Length: 410
Image 1 (cartoon, rainbow, N blue to C red):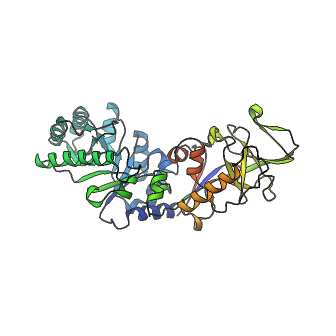
Image 2: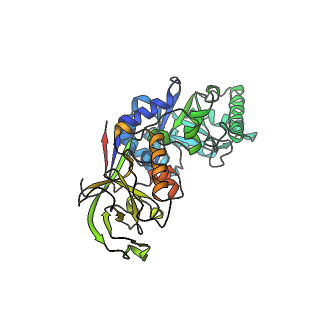
Image 3: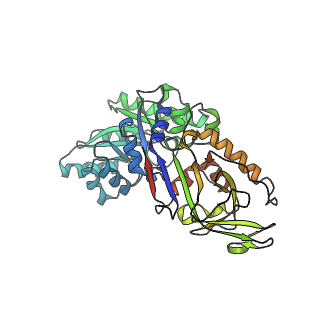
């Protein structure tokens, strides 16, 4: 589609990221986290791309589970989120494995499985300090309650997991991550002593897999943000030797090009005023596409390899860019919004460092609106946009709107 913003996804590079993360740990049973539409990149195509490399997939909602099951009939799907009582039977029919947090939840699933005449696999969620979901590990009742679940005749505990709250914060692992690991390990030992065997235990997220020693990884780990070419935090990126690739390219077309005289203003609220004769391109991209309004005046697009400032307020469907210092452009030309300009030069760390340096140069003087635009041939890093939107890469990626078509290369 030439007339709107599009997102191109390179599935080969997604696979490369998974292989980079599991290097040296080939016995590790990895789960691909494809919730939130695979962090914006497309759950079904991503799942198909890594199908042979993972134990199963993780999703957050009933609708995500059902959509994925239609496309992936033969792999476990672990559903992290809430399942309403009326949806339990359908989840069992579709072989969706729930994350159980209470005995009451388990009883409900057991009763539904009994009615269907099946024995259903489940995972036990353990709260080791995140305080979101799960049996509270440090309470004496946790091991006793999980043992009760283990005796339910129509459920089989396939896995037990917890989630690290600070695994992406230095030092690696930090004191609270160590405390969570200790709580998880202690509970696992109590269950073993009680005769409860759980074949798959996993507490490591992306940061955990990057930095935890082998002994603390148990049997499995869950991969999310690193699949999609970003590190869990800047601290993680600086500390790890694992090299990730940016597997996407977000572009949008120019819909109008015009010249403005010095002293004219652009956009809602007239927040930007030209200090020279300025060439302005309108780009078919806005906050309804996921390019958040908070980026107004704070970021830039790559126009034929030249970093050009976004000027004025970002609109719902369009934004304006100062292309005075860019090579000649015309209506229909596509600009790079985010991601790798060249799949062969998609190294995440290099792209991040290059984009950050270019942004700092471009925005070093808020009044220097005629500052020459530096070149950014490799693209624009999501982390730089996240910093300027006062958020994290997860939100920027998962916020790319469904109206943005996705195209896939394998």
